[in-house]
Amino acid sequence: MVMTKSDKTSQIVVLTRQEQLFLEQKHDILLLLKHLAESEEVTVKLVLDRLYDIGANNLINQKISSPILKRVLLNSTKIPKPVFRIIAYYWFKQNCPQLITDWLIEQVAFTAIESDIEEIVEMNSNSLQNTELELLKIKQLKSQVRLLTRILIIVIAALLGSFTWLFYITQIQPESNLQPANFCPTCIEE
Image 1 (spheres, rainbow, N blue to C red):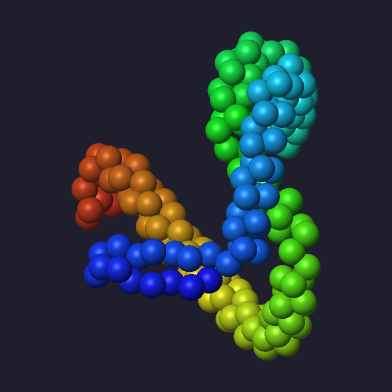
Image 2: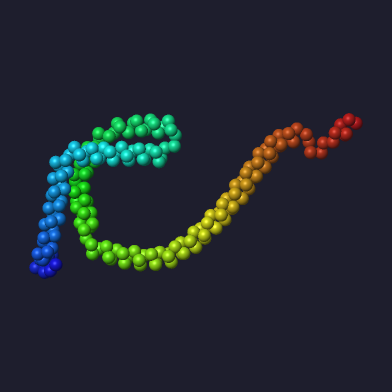
């Protein structure tokens, strides 16, 4: 790709023949996918319906533990389905052709695979060192959590003891007001 400056603000881009061909083919793929989404509207909506059903079932099964509530929610998921279908189809038409085009081109870009493999090898060697550091940090954090838990238990026990003692003192005080402090039961009989 050759770039020349005509002004300080604008740039003219001159593409090679191979780059122009690549961009035209990418644009053709995008147009074909847009046409496919338009012409196969029923098929796309059916796929979106199935994805909605699978997603709703998985979400309810993972998040809800009560069988009765699961049954009620699974039956009620059919109510917002038409609204989802309209919104999802609109989103699909706007975004999916471009996403699918980019993904397909990425799948046939074989040169990126070699650099990805090299990056993975480098990441694995770095990740071994990082995992050792992470294990040390985890051990340190676990010991801090244990210490804080013990301190919390001691503070709660001290507070409960204090409140119990205060409650006990307030319950005994009214009884002690009935008799004087130097009261002697043998002195009264005389």
